[in-house]
Image (cartoon, rainbow, N blue to C red; front, top):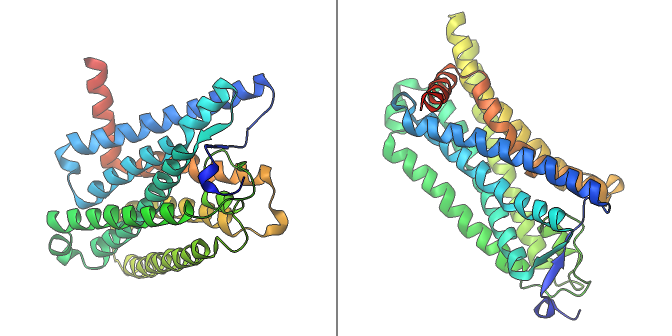
Length: 309
């Protein structure tokens, strides 16, 4: 193929060649997808319907659940449809849309996790200023900034990626359209602008990571200075779910994109992609509700109300 303008579709990597394994892949992805929809949907409904949860922490948690739902809906349904229909294709425009939304939701989630680290820092280290620094208007502005900035960031990435000439066929070694896999199809040296943008993205990623680490250094210092054991326990209960979600998000993403080339293979790349794109949206609600009494109580009341109707 001479260039990207001649492409009408891409061919994605199939999970299996036999019909039985294709149906097994469909069933596993369907179960995971439904679990993510249910868990995140319950959190969104609980936070929206219970007045006690109308606080900055739960406001950001609601946005995180929305992003988890959106991110898993970007990749999993198409992969399930391909397995069910025994096909591997995705249209050129569909691939571009998948790249845009994946980058958008993935980077927005990371931005939101950074904002949530700031929320925890203010709540524990300078609680007297919490109402001033994280009022309703401030929370809305921070959430809007996270969504708007990452929208423009994803638009830039997508436009830059699909302006590259593609001369190496149309087969992607991944179950969804991923920028590194598309760059492998590019002509010689035509991808350098996108590589430069990816390096800039890595710098932003590292900057947010440093901010989160420094926030938690200050948080743990403040917690360890608390005289009350009950106060320390409450502070840790507030922070550990967010820290667990951040650790899962960062560790899977770093391994996916920074693993040594010597251990890279198509099979491993697919497994890692499943771990960082499918597992977190399904697991995050569990991590957040595990040690959160207020959220568990709100979820219990919500389930009880549904059963009584």
